[in-house]
Amino acid sequence: MAKTVKRKPLRTTKKILASPFSIYWKKENYIILITGAIFLIIGYFVMSIDPWNSTPAIVVSPIILLIVYILIVPAAILFRKKGKEDKTEGEEIASGKS
Image (cartoon, rainbow, N blue to C red; front, side):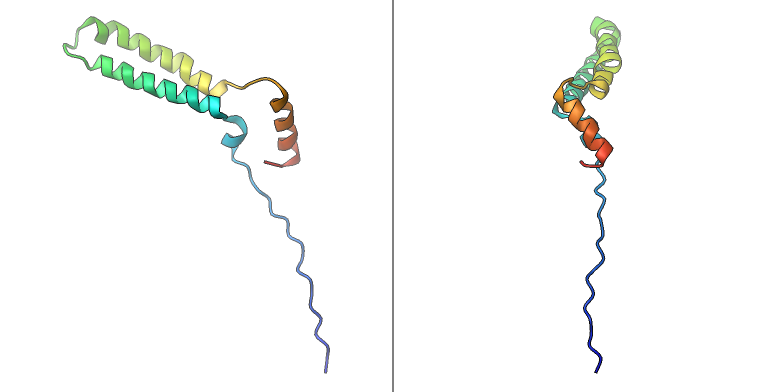
């Protein structure tokens, strides 16, 4: 009878794809974004106060919303700490590690 030879399985490499948000978004980014969402809710709440032509509804609320949309939300997206972490993250991205 013929002898059966057990073959070793071929080595397969699993590529672990890192989420783009885990690379760029840190805890500070989420805190800034949540702060912006809270201010958005406050701004729209102030806008809904009766009467519709009151000073808070016409002046204060648009200022709050403008600050949130122009400063806080972009800050949450673009904020990144400078330091040793940036160098290691760049090296990890280049090597494909997460």
